[in-house]
Length: 222
Image (cartoon, rainbow, N blue to C red; front, side, top):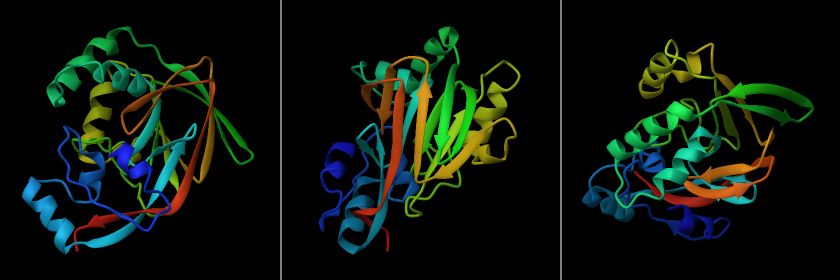
């Protein structure tokens, strides 16, 4: 999805999404998720809709980009020969044991804030996939991105936060850090992985996130 949609940004072409992956974050957000015949029917009877495109270190994304634990998991997951939610869960569980939170400095306009976070996501859509909604109030057509920092996890807060993520109430947790805007710069202590819709890149200590509003035309349910 990311590879094809990226070259259609700013064109008059309409992107047709037939979700076949294990997560389908953008398809679920846009209510395209479901059996393949339904997705094909949407291509015939749906309406084109303009959505935003995000950029992370120059790489386009449409669902979410991120640093920290989620980028590490994307890197490990992409090495697997077989995918699926259970394998994603197993990969995450093994990495969780040794993972340590990182220090981030978040710049937005004149504001400069420091956060210690387990993982840091910048979302265009509301969820990663599988209805795991990291940014429940995010919209793909509001001309903004939602930055979400998950606090260091412990036995006391991990399960409640995961439960909130799948219930769509993560934005109500006092432990979470949320900011909405058109541009963020995130500084970290060392270079490392960055993911854009699950595609993994190597990025430096300073990563810029920005949005290009109403730049991708995609066929959605009427």
